[in-house]
Amino acid sequence: MSAETQVVVIGAGSAGLSAHKELARLGISSTVIEASHRIGGRAYSEELTPGVWFDLGCAWLTDGDANPFAAIADRLGIALGRATWEAYNNPDHHRFIRNGVRLGKEEHAACRRYYDDSYAAVADAAENGSDPSMGDVIDLESPCAPPFLESIATGWGVDVDGVSCADNTSSVGELGYPVPHGYGNLVAAWGADVPVTLNARAERIDWSGPGVVVETPKGAIKADLALVTVSTGILASGEIDFAPLLPDWKLQAVLGLPMGTENKMGLAFDRDVFGPEGRGHHTVWSDDSPSAKVDVNGMGFNSVSVFTGGRYAIWLEKQGPQACHDFAVDRVAEIFGNDIRRHVVRSITTAWSSEPWTRGSWACALPGQAHQREHLARSIDDRLFFAGEATMVGGQGTCDGAYRSGVRAAQEIAANLKPR
Ligand SMILES: Cc1cc2nc3c(=O)[nH]c(=O)nc-3n(C[C@H](O)[C@H](O)[C@H](O)COP(=O)(O)OP(=O)(O)OC[C@H]3O[C@@H](n4cnc5c(N)ncnc54)[C@H](O)[C@@H]3O)c2cc1C
Image 1 (cartoon, rainbow, N blue to C red):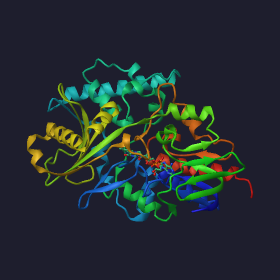
Image 2: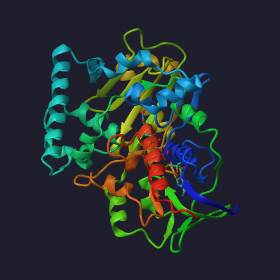
Image 3: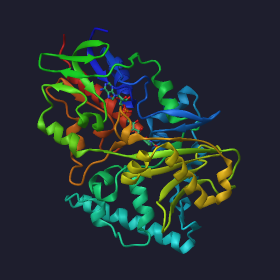
Image 4: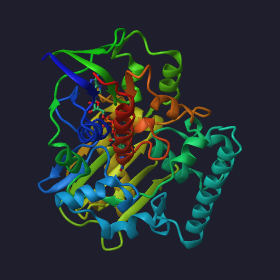
């Protein structure tokens, strides 16, 4: 491959694909290169059992119909789980299971109050501008702290002491709709008309001359400018050799937004072991075993997704897929009893912190570093542009946020591109 184009887009996830489409709409040519063998990046579905889809990455269309992928799904004839909104998005339907027993009404209400108070304390801290960690401002002694800590570890992929109050506050949004056929499949169907060169990792981006030259194992591409959509995990790893090096302010932005890890374990059962009341969100914790978040039957199948986040998720991932499987089965048994064990037919487990093309699940701002998202989004010398979920304030860590960042970057490029 040796090519010349106006823009070379690096990465064919949601951001890279939307950028290509927006550039094409604006009459600008672009070449999209992708390191892996498929498009979609962190949007990726696999079949758990025939007809039962499991999303290894994004699964929920945050903010429902306000999400651009809702209209895309409607246009493509892909069904969304709009009817499940109430079961998953209403906080009162969130079940808390401590030591194998569901919390009663009063304890449940106390935990909900603790969540509200904690988020209010975090929002106050964000507003007063000091941007401490969430762990600095919440009551860690409360008996309701364990499920909250779990929700932050899975929500951010980082334990509370590493999460910026300002970043958390700027990201608030609704869970939205699930995609029974897979969010990854939806993104792949929408992106199928984008010409992407696969297995073409950007190894070096030379921006020392008037344009850019991007070297890949399939050859070099010359372009007026490059749009980089890879994760901060990839940028921090030094895998892409920028020549000259990225300026210090950009490196500070990358380092202020390290990748968190949320892992998911999908379990399929040979029958409905949950019962009519079982569907929905559960958080399980106990005195002698680790905690987890469990989504039961989210897509309307006899399956669950079990989530871990933060340091524990990274540790468990290193123990291998069997340990992850066992962990997930144990957590589901804590809710529904040991009998469920003999009905498990298959599992899929993720390992995002060691995933070579992202090195984590999404970027989470360190305390005091929430402002770095804006710096990460800023272009350099009108030649290197940046998009991807990490560049968003509001919508960070989401697939639709990544989509919007690609559109934003394409429009910036259009405004900056000099006539040839
Ligand atoms: C476990 C998990 C659960 C999630 N749940 C949700 C959810 O429910 N809802 C939601 O909205 N979001 C969710 N997300 C987040 C969402 O998936 C991501 O924010 C979004 O998909 C990121 O898109 P992106 O384009 O920014 O990055 P990516 O999808 O990572 O795309 C970047 C692309 O660049 C490629 N690449 C890397 N290095 C190179 C290189 N050197 N050269 C060329 N290409 C390269 C990668 O292979 C990748 O395809 C979840 C993510 C995870 C991991």
